[in-house]
Length: 269
Image 1 (spheres, rainbow, N blue to C red):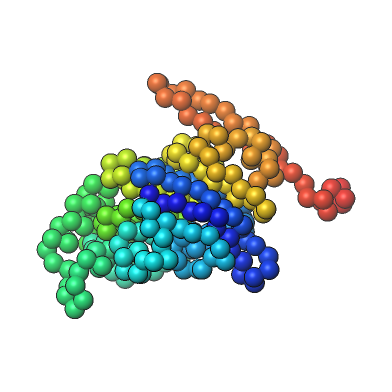
Image 2: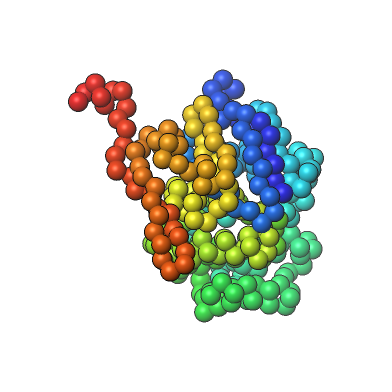
């Protein structure tokens, strides 16, 4: 569904933020983007969404070069879920979700009954029906994050891009957000790209993982990408990966037990 070939980006034209990154995510698959802080994860996603122009490389959606797509046609296929923190909206939950259908409503017209019914049905499916008339400003971070996901999904996109959707949420809301993402991929065959700081979430919920480094990257099935060796290499953390069996299911966890000191830290110790 989405294919990236040899993508490179630099802000100053001299130092690459990332170079020659390639990956492919199929319909209904979820790909996690991992990497240390400041490594370029959000920058790469902004290139995919055409907010930034890469120095080189190609991005294809369903085989078509996105450079040849108009903005309106691109955004009919792609939905974006930003982080909910620091966002302030005075709209009701129902109106916020209906706004996701704006590209399907002719200019000068207001959303009709069909759009509102669709929004209510989606909120009901996500367990948010009791919030429909509440102001978005009155919601918790987790509740608002789920409303933003509903706004993205009501457009029925082919591709859903999520920027750290589980950050700043408690454990329960993290799981709820991730399960909604998983159901969208499985039940609606949406291709999902999620920028996350949680390798454990990638192991549990995604099929593919891209780990960005300063001068290299790894792209593979999540179980092959997220290894103790790669955690050490790309995060500078010594960690162990373990398994826990609960009922008939096996869950994988990551236990970080020490970080690797930088050269200047070693010299000072």
